[in-house]
Length: 70
Image 1 (tube, helix red, strand yellow):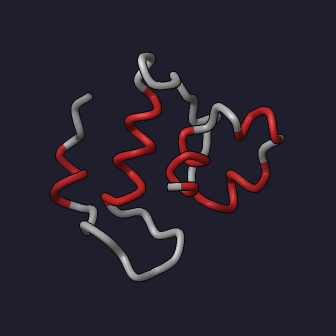
Image 2 (cartoon, helix red, strand yellow):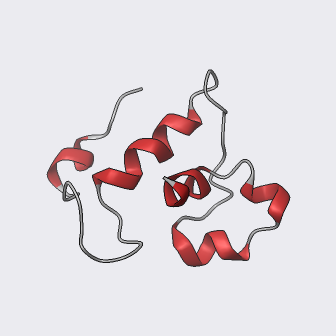
């Protein structure tokens, strides 16, 4: 797994805002994309609100679901 440069330059290590994008949830999100872990999908969207719009089956293979859980 290779993180894009924005992971280090644009994302804060950890935000105090609930459901904010920072390094903390981005790491598990990207890790779950690895086929050796789960091979998750983004289904064309990110964040808490988008995750809430997915079916239960889609959430089982959506990368942000795991990031939000973590």
